[in-house]
Image (cartoon, rainbow, N blue to C red; front, side, top):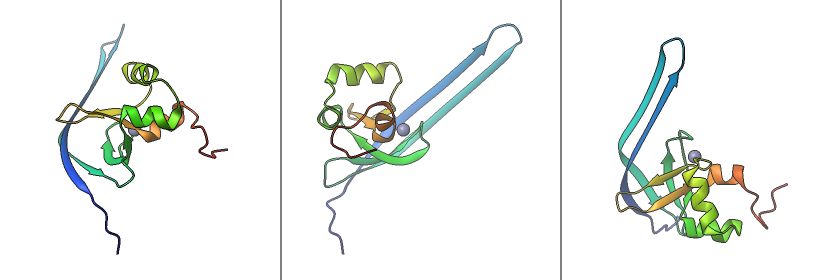
Length: 115
Ligand SMILES: [Zn+2]
């Protein structure tokens, strides 16, 4: 039996997407409003949470963990967040969590042994 010291937190995720098209009147508005999000903190420091963009429960890391894992400067990590290059959520407490799934697609992890 695994004894995982799991801490469950609740966070709010709000994502809205608006698409406007010139010419023909075509407007798509997607609005996801998940009031509750289950966030499970794992022993290794990462968290498991639902990524709205992935539509799946994925591993999430703090920006600091992302820096440690990727050896990329934190400013570059934040820039990727700002440019929507990587998925992220913000907890009710205001903490930023980065979707590891999207981060791995953007950058190569040194020493991870991937291809
Ligand atoms: Zn994601």
